[in-house]
Image 1 (cartoon, rainbow, N blue to C red):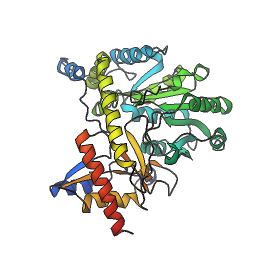
Image 2: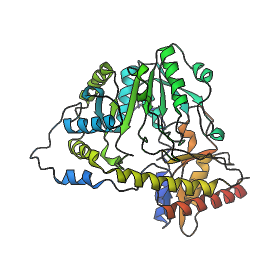
Image 3: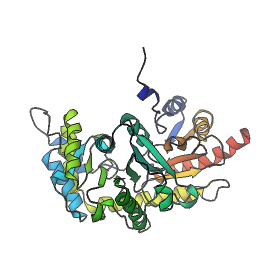
Length: 398
């Protein structure tokens, strides 16, 4: 029997595709330290679990496709505390930021339309575009200059009659870049000049380091009807498994249109929505402590790698990832080798080959994405294993 061509051409996740090798290593008694995935190990705020324990309805019923009122109010309070004047018609609750991205693509694009994205980018943008039958048009950014945006003319050269939007992750996954206000203004100008949407994936908004200021695309009032924010509780509150996110836009017609997709999947999970609504009560100290912890971890990992001959990486300023260029030809093979053939004191490390974070064939093959979502001690051990493993690998595969 034949399968869907749409899914046959869709790639497996570069973040998860090495799981079988990790399982085999664990079965041999080897501890695998995972730097491959952005799964926070920070404790989820206790108010989330308290709300679940206090749930006492007799029937677990469907809820409104738009989201339950307490959760909408919670997101509204969060955004209005940041200074944005939103109301309930500006928000659609989704099953994580992933569904928000898919809903956005389907809502603004027809089959064959294009979205421009700086690469490397979050790998699932490829998957969502395949499902929406649209084309990603990348423009390059580079490790050597911290993955900053190129000149306006470079991006403009990618715009065609089929272009509908520019999509960015800010702070960036997988690069850790935090775009400046000037960089965002350049994108805003392009959107106005060429009648485009700006899709800003801001799920890592809380994780900006070195006393830098974060600029949201919502701050540009001249394009308020063109800006679409992708948000989620997954990273902010270390609640990835809840699968609660939202689409945010001051374009109420867009939100109303996307609600058709929301109705087609009926609703987001009821209990998780109730629990997520309580997260607005998380004390500020929680975020201060989490940010401080991630900044310390970033410093540990970067300081371990920065002086290693042949390794190129710029210090990231946001999120909890960095892209590292290695002096090898095939990071996919290297990642498998680390899991299958290399360990120190019965420990090894799992990394994410970076080619899956590009759509341009051939790019990223000598790069890996590292996540610093593990405790400080394990992070130091993982960095040591990675560096010593790299030296051994180069001896074998000259």
